[in-house]
Length: 163
Image (cartoon, rainbow, N blue to C red; front, side, top):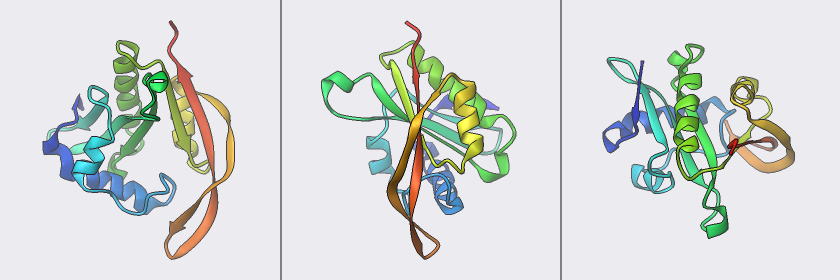
């Protein structure tokens, strides 16, 4: 497995993996992956990676700014999505490690993640990298999935850089 910067030539595979996460029902409130231009514009340069094997993208991780206010310029939200066929093979651990390395060398001092509590594997992954559970935001939003709409809680985790 190779970790490389996320580039426009990865767009189709990245968005397909995002859509697979959406379709799984425990990754996001989103109902459809956006066009690449919108996706790309929402991610921080220098903090976006793909994991690849010889043939395809296995997963991706990227940061999004939480605000356009200057005071929050060093605070970002983590997104990490793994192709369903690549789950359980260490792809998420490798990607999150690369993302944290990039922030520890850069201008991001706080990472946050909002995870559905049912996604226990993602919570465990983040905690393994020093994220702490800040709390659970109850009934954070309505999740439209498979023709139903229900309130979902979101576990809120954060990681602060050591320095």
